[in-house]
Image 1: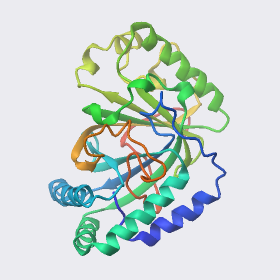
Image 2 (image 1 turned 120 degrees about the vertical axis):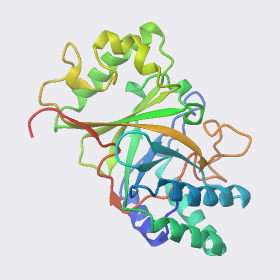
Image 3 (image 1 turned 90 degrees about the vertical axis):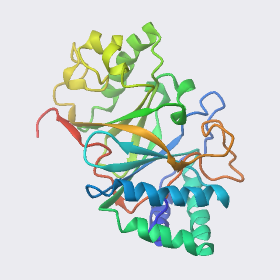
Length: 302
């Protein structure tokens, strides 16, 4: 989503420069997952989701008609309090800064866009953002990770205690093995948080074709759980008891009505570093994200 106040974007862009992130483009084989992920959450008052969606759809139409080369995918919460989670992927952090310039110019040149974004901001309760980097070594079926081709998305945030990063990676690989053995078609990408949450933290984004996958997934029956990243219920235990301080999970539907993807192309395969700044985009908020999900399971000691 585009920020009503572009000065807030510049503050984040300045902070990003402090990170020495290598400029590595997403490979053609893994072009369906972003290298840099920005999750931007907007919490809404009860009963205001329809109003928000109506305004945001107008904004998305303006971006498509202009056209403004900035793209994003909006996820609408099914579980937890009403909120929108924007899934914004980039090849590099520099592209985020470039997208901010594009957004600022669009708002300055379109009075209707500025008005709509002001109206949208009036509906927001909180606006929070978190930045993370892709960990393809512990992800699954990235060749199928095309978010606009799936109906549902499950986002799981794993907050670790310090010193357990390597154990977490080994546990994720262990979880992946049975999925590979049965040829599960449900892909997931794991991202390691860089900014916006206390480190160490990881975000698992799993794409689902239908909710029926919760009912008949072989993996769910085998491990006596439906969420593969719910380490507290794994049998046998894949992590030490105190490794995970908290685990939060939420389910979303992909709402293309309030998203903006390149016309006539798959958002996953469309990328042009020289002319378009973003694969999926919404400008970030200033405040760090408190969590991308609200269904909470506490693990370990408080």
